Amino acid sequence: MTVASKDEASSERSEINEIPRDPSTRVVNRTRFEQFCINITNEKLQQQFNRHVLKMEQEEYEKEQINWSYIEFIDNQDILNLIEKKPGGIIALLDEAW
Image (cartoon, rainbow, N blue to C red; front, side):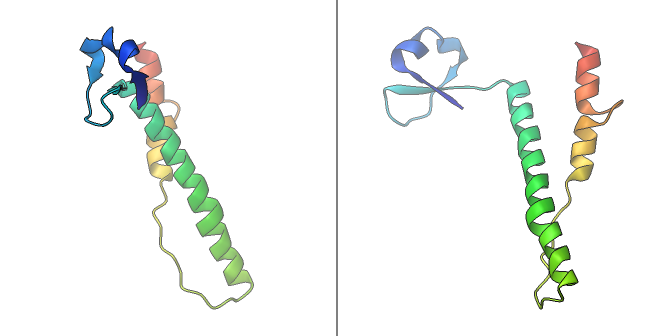
């Protein structure tokens, strides 16, 4: 979400969606593609967190025979494959369409 000053936003009225906050600011809408890229990044960050904080730590606890409660989490690799797989992933299909 990009915040523009009142003067900057006045020339872009057709592309702006007002959110009642501070009257001197306006919020510029993101394109669907920008939002898609943000979502991909979030999925990759979630995967890194899951892999390094949850999965690897729990494997280490098992090796060291530490008494703990297993934390279940969703592995989002299937989602990333759907997006990034070559050929046939969403990004590859978008690339072909352009």
